[in-house]
Image 1 (cartoon, rainbow, N blue to C red):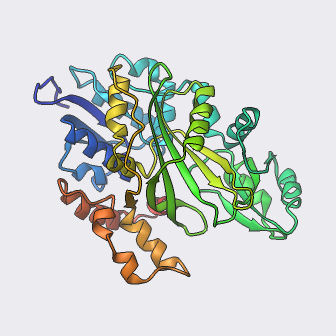
Image 2 (image 1 turned 45 degrees about the vertical axis):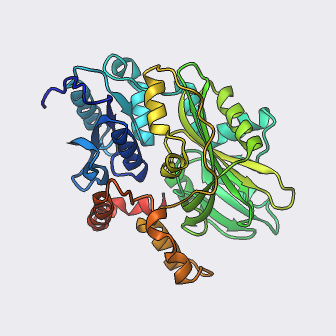
Length: 395
């Protein structure tokens, strides 16, 4: 691997893992526009982030979720090729966990901003998150914690004439999430084999407004950036990743989100999810996503450039806290998320409404990086042929 030496034409250097993801493309574009030399890691040449005009170098390496040993070797080989410390952006859970476990070896080679190990562990465990929030007086849905199939069956039976949600303690997106009604049967033994301990939680009606509060805490635990969005569509329609969302403000929910993360001694980025209970009008905590989030592009377009702010915070450069942004900005995950949402939704909008603003609102489209839109189609079409990637449609 060629040595990467300082070149004064670059504002800085960065390494972005897991370049397949939409959020990774947003990081690459944001840093590239700011003048950074950006290296992207991915497990195949069909990695979407490889093909941004702002990607300076591509590095094919196994993902941490597939082969953690190969991922670590590949990452250290790449970091070792720099004569100047880059900023490291671990983008997925497995990458973050690996980097957290090896931060002592990484820090001499790269700048990285991660929460303490115990804080990360708490945030990744939905049960720990709910228990911590309850102790802080933060409102949460009625929740039971099932550690075995017998407990799960018992707690599910407590929801008489009510719907409820089953969520594994650990997991991201819609993986392992079940939406059930009173009396529905589920093979709890099979579920526990697949997902382990779970939450049995009251379901907030679909009509309840869903908010996400994105936060960046600097190396001293001070608030460096905050942003709120409202999700308006999702896929799967029963509950999954947002496919359409809009920038919004809710100062109380933002305050509660920061309070929760401060109690964990948080460092780096996280997104705290909330949902409004229609009857009481209260916003209830859903979970913490302890990483860059899928709707990152909306924050950037609204005026909170989290990737650049993360880079500056990791490098311990002074920045003014960023919490002012434009509200009412719309952004959608078009390929294939919103298309699949539209096809599968029963009471969907008319085709004219669906098409209105489709290009400008698409997070895949950027006028300065047009080819990434084409490669978003080509790469995903190629990966759709591999069953390994099918599960990611639910993210």
